[in-house]
Amino acid sequence: MAMLKRLRRFATYKYRRVLIYLRRITLPGFQGVPVYDVLRFFIVGLFDSKFTLLAAAMSYNFFFSAVPALFLLYTLLTYFPAEHLDMQAETRSYIENFVPHNVYTLIDKIATSDYASERRSGTIILGILLTVYGALRGIIAMMKAFTKDAETKEIFKRRNIFQLYSTAFILFIILASLFFVTIAVLVVGKSMINYMQEVQLIGRGIESFLLTGFTYFITLILIFLSVSLIYYLAPATQQRWKFLTPGGIVAGVLTFLTLIGYGYFISHIA
Image (cartoon, rainbow, N blue to C red; front, top):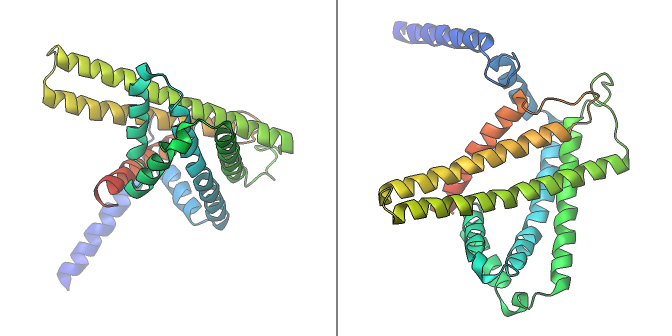
């Protein structure tokens, strides 16, 4: 019994020391906001009913647009000339890391079928419409989550329907462009690493390590740029927030860790 009391006192003491430490420290990009306040706001937001409803709406619309987006992407890849096969292979490899194997196999089978190889314009137009429709609805739900306290007129302002959809469309175009730029950078970077291995500047073991590290690094950059752009453009604020914000940094780190965990689950369990 005495031992339990000692352990409880020790745990309580350490817990308070950690809280004091978190209230005192801040991280680069947090603009002087203590880590404790950032974590507290994040945890409180997790249990906010309005946030959870908007998150569900975002998830539904993004998943709704994911399947036609993958079909559209695979269809567009067939338009790449033969000398750009590396781009096709890298895109498919990148997608395979984050899509369940059965789903990936089904989409790949349909997208590479004789029907898809005919390059029907109707299929591409339908894919574009469904992708844009689902993505815009998801982005708009996300924008509404940012301005859930829109009645605070000193901070937020209201967007009309045109401003809402135009901002969402701009975000969609920028994020889609970032994805394709990321794929291009991965292709160039991996080609350079393979060339370094061929001329024996690096060993085969180092090559594998560099390829994996380079992929994770570029993915991290993509996530941080995407999240920062969303935090910069999505909120309807009276004064534009800075490009790097505490919320954007935390969201970027958590998204990256979640993506790694999900990729591991897809590769080793699903």
